[in-house]
Image (cartoon, rainbow, N blue to C red):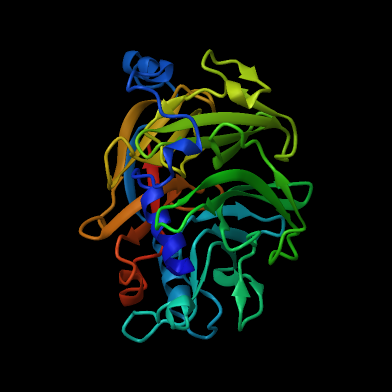
Length: 388
């Protein structure tokens, strides 16, 4: 079993609701009794702060930008496809794109790519990477050399790897969250989430972190599915993943840096310094989702994990950045979904200018060879979501 198959294939399952993470990795999920938040949702009408979703259309600029860049063979150590798709506006005005599993290399004239190096081809497969956008042009950031690229967030050994979460700026440095996964046996699905960390990068040297720090990791919550700066706090959103259900958790830290003192949202709406008090706020979120300020309210964007293999992106709203999030609205049905192809992990990019709130989602296949046959499958899609 190559590294490609052992890393990419689990990603395809864990992020859409059919988790491959063993249940003994953390406490068993509760019996299917409505949580406090779900009871509130059932009894509460749509938030009075909630904007109504008006439309969702393809973001032509970002779609064409990544299509052209991914197909360009002027360099053979750069991006041809990835998932994760977080973004951060840098101090110099550049946009940092943060990816998890990434293909680098050549695109053939027929729109295919060679197999990965581990399978005898020339395509490089990394578990994480960056791309930088400036003035409508993209460039790939990796460590290593052009001949032998390596991940920007290196694993500690061959049994571990990092997938990216959301990112923030603090003290002039880029702080990117990562979730470390580990392989514990020879089976295809013998892997599990292990811990959360934050890596600090200098904006002028993004190919490797200048330091890596532990984040709260003691209670099975993968932080940070998304982040939001609001009212002097940085809110950190996490997911407790049982495949189905997946539970939303909320934490916050004063100021900009994630290395401050964390507080965790309890079931009664108060905050605790103890991660063990972190409450299951609601179910139905994906492993990556977002909370963004829209008008006078806050909009949660997520793939709908209340449905198996869902093609639906949905929105909830609240008058506060920590909920309760109510008034579920349909945003978009992904047209790629069907057969071997599935979509997952929709979330917003509020700092990016578009005809509305820019939202990305990922596309993947259950059949690994599909990624060789058609490079367009394993690339993010972009939407402009408007509200009224």
